[in-house]
Length: 332
Image (cartoon, rainbow, N blue to C red):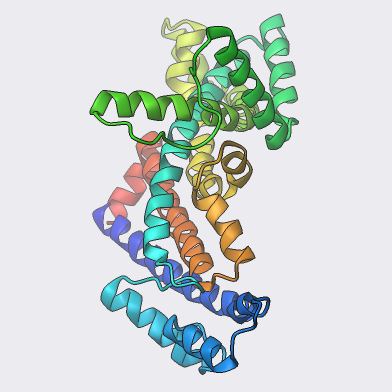
């Protein structure tokens, strides 16, 4: 098993390396840092622009392979991901934004996954009953609500609660307040900023998991191993949760593991509505500002997150399915 995991890590590391380098060549081809200086008034002399871009390894007059090696060697030997066209360190930008995104996405993903799976089990056990139809109606409505609409609705609800309480219970903008010190004051402040965007992400994520888990569980409820468990004296609910769910939850867990990277870089609408400077918003602004190395860093982060998700998916499958555990354990 250890050999299998090591082999998977090595293969994904190679894929991340290839994807990151491919992102560099694509970003270099489609983004033009020189255009950032074209609108300056008064216009800068061309030699000044050349010198500035050369300082940041962004001068298009420098051979492409030379720029690529300067960028790659900076990462390999100094872990320096380069600078923006105005000289801001990409390392500083990404390190701040990764932590911001983790705060937002991690909690929302855990809550949405738990809620989706729980509703899937609950409604599958009550197929075609009132509770099943009612939750299906709610989830259908939620899955069709655009993220922007859900976010604005949550903002209005938060403002209404604040007005009703006569105090700021929930913040509708930013990830933290200024001049908040002490462990518990900081925790309370971050929680107050997190609640509304987390609710928004949960609302738009859980419904798909609800329907997927319900469908997969219904496919396994009448399986032979569930009937055998019931024949041994287990109630229908216990037999489903202990046996059918263990099999039916595998595709859901794998899907969540692979979806996490997309949530990190795809939460741009939620981050924009609530003023969070996360990875999704940075990806959009880096492209808009012709920030070659910023865009490449976000692509590399997405590739790395995908690799981690794939490895976690393997671990989940091995943990939940004894057949896979035996097969892979024997092959190691």
